[in-house]
Image 1 (cartoon, rainbow, N blue to C red):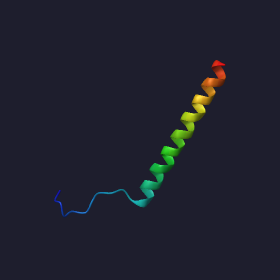
Image 2: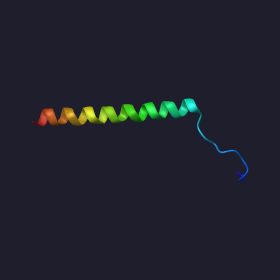
Image 3: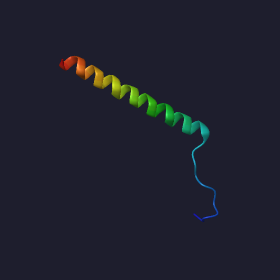
Length: 41
């Protein structure tokens, strides 16, 4: 790849999907943590 080649960046739609997946993973992790705390208490 030459320095003058355009960058291989993901499309706006792909970035939106990745952002949504990250947010979903964070919510699931927080729910799992809250569930573990409730079960152990």
